[in-house]
Image (cartoon, rainbow, N blue to C red):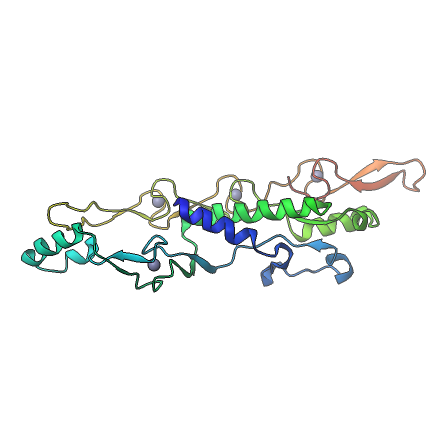
Length: 257
Ligand SMILES: [Zn+2]
Ligand SMILES: [Zn+2]
Ligand SMILES: [Zn+2]
Ligand SMILES: [Zn+2]
């Protein structure tokens, strides 16, 4: 990914209100509001957002005659326009109208760095506010301490811990083609004609591959100490059954780690 894009993303994300992120309908809370309101939900990558323009690479202007336009004109014209291209005549980018940025979807290569930045900013803000991790979310320590281990585990299951490789996306950008889905054909310097693009054999033109760590679920692995419940039974002489339910110490009640 381009350095300029990274910088822009960082600036954009740091200005976002972290706790205002909305969760998709599929992850709607099923616990009573009294419990769920104790959570600061994790951020979600928006489908589309204001990002640097891809056509002009954020500069707001393009070469008046890009090489892909050259193959449409005749040979004689091509020779003269090629000279013009070399002189680098600039005109306003038609995609972003010269702004250098526009609302668009993330490219495959931008997704993971964007969600990583978002997640790190969220983690930092939550820890700074003195909250503790509860699954993939955070909650106030004092509020959590008043809950039973069962309710703490239920709360931690609300936002399951995410895979540390794909950060919950389930897919990662194809390394072979850098997310493009094809290998771009080279441009003939003499004629300005571009070779056809070659489909990527690794991702089958999708630009993404399934994350191997989580098999595409986007979630962290189930904790083997508690079989994913987040709870364990501990010997307790004072309890009628001789046992009491406590949080699993391996996963802190999240059920995944
Ligand atoms: Zn542009
Ligand atoms: Zn993964
Ligand atoms: Zn590929
Ligand atoms: Zn566990």
